[in-house]
Image (cartoon, rainbow, N blue to C red; front, side, top):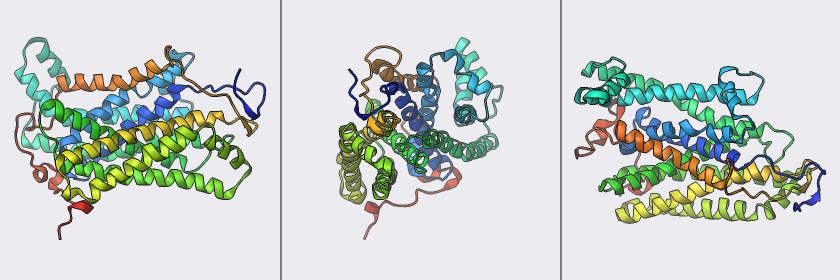
Length: 414
């Protein structure tokens, strides 16, 4: 028997948007967040992020390839999903997603090609047989790796990053727009929703890269670059503060206004979402990593690299939990409100098996990592020179010759 509290309509007792609709913005957030990191290097000359710039771009590309799969799995007729790309209906909110997704995929694919073009050409020259034909196809007939040609590549990368950055922000901000535009649901209908989705995407993308970089460094048997870890921790701290502030302000505004809908929203937060919202999203996934990152940023110069790596990774893992719980509370929590706004619908418990179950969600999360592994095997993710053991040269590696600027609070010397 469904657990319904208050007053609900007889045909309004179940949650229809499943775990797949939670996974959709969660995976899309990694795309936008990772691209922001790679843009900080390619577009804004943050040379300290060079060790993760290519990893960030490959991560964004890998997650983008599976970003639409949760929606396909949720559709009753998944074969109709691609129609949003080829026959867009301009008065449909989802048509915007199709155009943004297609356009951003094209920009990101072009930027990946320009960034890896030199490696593609080198591998085409060194390979034999089928491998040579494969890399020659990827090279698209351009074998010029002269300094002049590489300079053109760098300019093209900067231009594509300049176009792709707003594209990545729009792609994920648009997810927030879809929820924020649903006026009938007061839990969703707020102007802050697109902004919250966007900044939380930055949190999830940077947190994922922090964890990935630590894991990759461990697997490669080399120490993580500490200026890079410190910089990622600073950016993660900044975006986490913004995210928590916006999420708290959203609730405070609702509580201060005390509109009719606040009665049922306050009941939702203190009953059905008490664990996932108050405990997981705000305390375990929000407050605790914010304190850990504050230690890393404010006491950076005093920390041993092992302590810095441990605190940063622990904070990043908790941030990933925070963002997932935020997506869960938005998507599932919003559906728990009855259309009467005087009661709560029955609980939602995802199934284990099936195309919208927990195992499928895990497969969706793991799929981009499999793509990333293939990407590394085919093209290589490490920055040029690093794989051969050459020392890092941050200032010289920054696009446009920009030096690693902006020391963190903990880096200021007396």
